[in-house]
Image 1: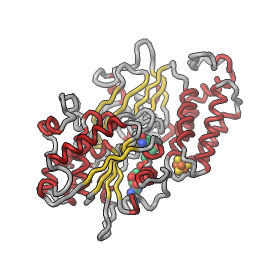
Image 2: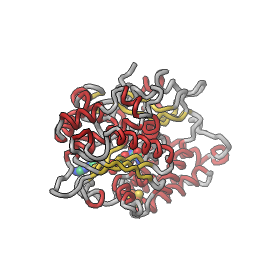
Image 3: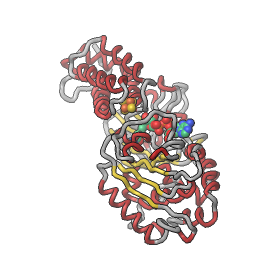
Image 4: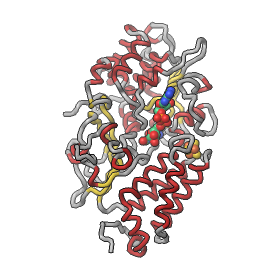
Length: 444
Ligand code: L3W
Ligand code: SF4
């Protein structure tokens, strides 16, 4: 069985309760950190672990903690980004609803490390039942002395607040999230200054994803070096993968980073292979925001090496022949999937979710959606394919936040790898618009 850090106890009946979680060794990291470690020592363990941000960017968490400004007399905040809304990503939701105390324990040790006395968990607003689960867990931890004033008699105080989001994808972008938490419209801010210097209420703030924070109890208990032994190269530890699409066993899986894509896709421990009678056509490895890969580049990189589930291997070859680990939203397409329709679908999402602050994103996402709509519906012209590529280039790198890039990459990569399919839609409109039509490489 593969190594489990986050999900080892997830199937224990009653694990959502304080008592059962505690019996499985829960809250020992809080005891260890608060009673026998300094905040700096906890930060040091996070740095040694090499754990990278699990929300999508993969930025080293210990390094981010090291950037936190500490001006005298100014409060610092830890904010957990639980606004998971990336299409194809549902792992934070799973973790919070099944083992809520893991996140609460992670929040306590992380807040202690950062010197925060008030911390927030900003949860996607649609997940009201998860918010109730978290609030119950917080009450239980408080009643046992692990939260609130003078935790375990140490003199350290921590208030933990669960804040529902308003249901906007953009509020998962860290600065939009902070704006929303302050009660304003969730518009991303220009960076720098980074939240580590000016974040919530203009105070130093660390924003970390649910899964990132949930690794901290294990790291405190076992040490950062032990964590760094797991995984491969700079992709240390394990990763939760949300697997969906045309596979036998969709679900959330914890993998050790470095597992081959082939094993993840075909093993019965994970996806269990493509659904019977069908074959692999394409893969999006890290949620809708990352480039799509065609079948011939999924198991092997362009250099013919085994493709691995790691930050480096998945993006090997850059956007020419790679995808990204991103938030771990592994979406599999078989030959019945229409790439044009899927690209149009993603495009509608980004257009809808653009906050509208920057023109390239506000206008460009709309144009892409319109052009893709007409190609998908049999009204496209040959000029449209290059027009789409041109729009993606005008958006990429020219916006305040990564949503612009996230809207561009799926379109640019779909055209790069499946240009024939776009052309077929334009040249064979009646066949392409027939119900259930999908291009199978049989262009006349
Ligand atoms: C201080 C510096 N802090 C960087 C911090 C920064 C942030 C983190 C990473 O985008 C990605 C995006 C989506 N001083 C710093 C510094 N930081 N330099 O490090 O920053 P960055 O800018 O690389 O990325 P980001 O803005 O966090 C996130 C991709 O994730 N994505 C989206 C997933 C969305 C969800 C969801 O459902 N909400 O999971 C999926 O792939 O495209 O590339 O904290 O402050 N010098
Ligand atoms: Fe808003 Fe898009 Fe600009 Fe991000 S890139 S700030 S979502 S308009």
